[in-house]
Image 1 (cartoon, rainbow, N blue to C red):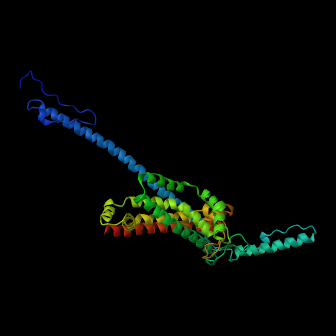
Image 2: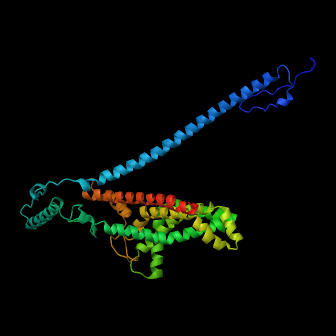
Image 3: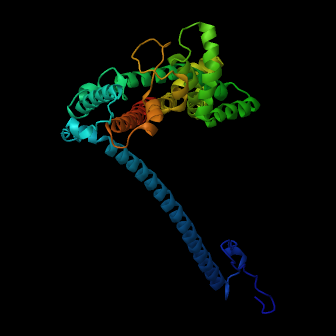
Length: 393
C-alpha cells in the first residue's frame, strides 16, 4: 500500500445504536485490527448500558405491580377481619347479666291522675317483658334456633332474626336473573364474535358494555316506576313489586358482565377449528354452536359465575323492586327480601353493638363466604377440569 493512499474510514459508535463494521472493507495492515477491536468494545459497552436501563425499568414495574397486588390483598384481608370481628360476639358472647326490672324501669309521676297511673303500669309491664326477653335467653337472643327460624322481625318485643327467608329471597332473585340474563348474553356474544360484520360489532359491543356503567339505583328506579306497572298490567298478578320484577331488573345489570367475558372467550377460539368445521361442510350456525361455543366453555362458565356473584351482592335494585317482604315461598310472583337489601335498609338504623347490629354483620359474613366459595369453585372447575378437558390432557 502506498503511503499517499488513505485508509478507509471506520465508522465510530455514538450512543446506544452502533453502526455495523464490515471486516472486509478494512484492508489488512497496520491499524485495521485495532479499529475493529475499539468498535467492538464500544458496542459491548453500549449494550451493557442499554441492558442496565431496561433492567431498572423492568425492576420498577415489577415492584410497582407487586406492591399494588399486596395492597389489594391486604385490603381484602382487612375487610374480612372487620366483618367477622363485628359478627363474632354472636357466637362467643358470654352469659348476659340479669337486670332487675326495678333498676331499669323508672316510675312516672302521676300527680294523682288515675289515667296516668294506669298508663305507667302498662308501660312498666311492657318494660318487664322486654327486659326478660333481653336477659333471659328467649327469642330475642341470636341463638341457633332463632337464626334458623322462618321469621325476620328484628324490631319487636321479642325480636326474631330468622335468616332463612332472606337467604331464600337472595337465591330466588339470583336464579331468576341468571336464567334470564345468561342465554341472552351468551347468544349475543356468539353473534357478535361469529356473525356480526365489523362495523356492526364496533357499535353493538360498546353499546352493550355501556350498560355495565349504569348506576344500579337508576335501574331500580326504572323497575319501580315503569317496569313493575307494565308487567302487572301485562300478566295481571296481585303484587306489583315481587321477585319476578326484581329478577328481570337484575338481569339488565347482569347481561353486560356475562356478555363481555363470554365475547372475549369466544373471540380467542383458534381459527383453524372453525375453518376445519366449515371445510367439512358445516354451516356457520352449526360451527358456532357445536365447535366455537364448546371450545369457549371455560370462559363462558366463568362469565356466568361472575354474573351470579354480581346478582347475589346487588343491593339497590332488589331494595327498590322486590317488595321487601321476608317470605319463604316458591312463588316468583310474591314479594321477597334479600340479604343485601336487608343490610342496606337497616344498617343505618340499628344501635351500635346490639344483637340486631351483629346479625346484620353476620349476613355480610355469609355473603362474603359464599362469594369466596363461588370464586374457588370457578378457579378449580374452570382451570383444572375444563381446561384440561379441552386441551386433551
